[in-house]
Length: 178
Image (cartoon, rainbow, N blue to C red):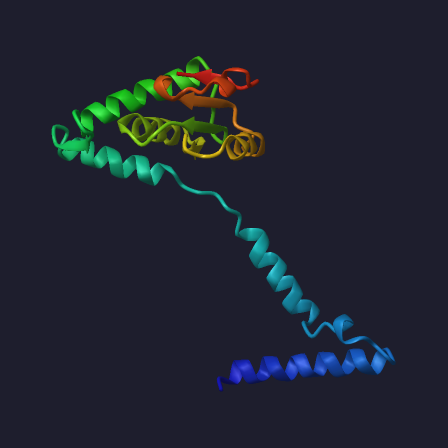
């Protein structure tokens, strides 16, 4: 064993013995083998590590491809194909609309209700361009699941492919962008 591990085990045993000696009849679940210094180190480590995803990397990488090969095909559907430049221009237009018309800002949540298509790719890129979060909702989900996702995710707006809009969504309190 590594000498650091042996030292830590020794310190843990010493901490256990100290607690048992101080309190007669201490329950096993009450014994804390970590020293105050170790607890502080753990607290410091976890308090420094906050979740802060960097979506700019996705955008930067996508823009690098747009610069290198703007006319290369990026997305192909059954009957259409889109170049990287086209996807970029359309996603930027969506991002502008989300920011200017719907006041979507960094950190906001935007739900996307659509079947897999080029539109969902553009919507996802647009949302990432403004450092917001997207939640995709498959139209094949059961009504109850969709309702739960929408209530749980606290999204600011719902993007819907017009051909996929079910009647129950039109009666919701959400702002819907088709």
